[in-house]
Image 1 (cartoon, rainbow, N blue to C red):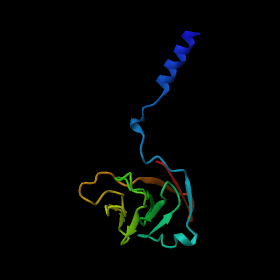
Image 2: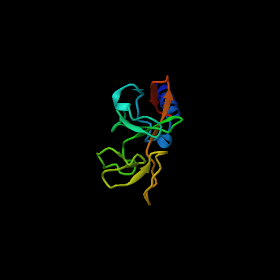
Image 3: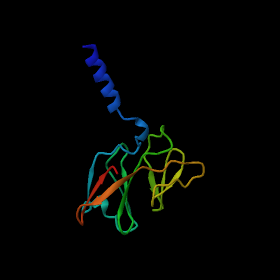
Image 4: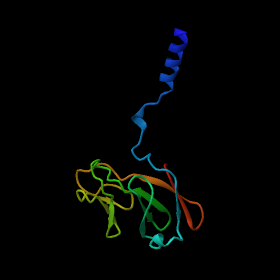
Length: 135
């Protein structure tokens, strides 16, 4: 009996994966965006819209040739309970400390900040439907 318990414990330890590869961005349940909904009227090329999904919501951006989806969580400040906001149609801003991020790729635009905004995979299911998932 001791050998069986020892064997099961050993197999369990071998089967466990390290959390080193866990990404803070792997937090989104799949979201479906219906582009005919009035809240997405501004998703023309170069346009953006807020959407539900993730802990603080999403920012959907139309690049002109594809769509991008970013988390509204401030990536550099765990204590910020406010969601990122879009300013001037070109940047995302953390309302807690005014740190800015590019709406094109989520990269930080403020000196000294290294974390980018979490981006999610967007698949265009049809001409009017997007699917947002983890990469």
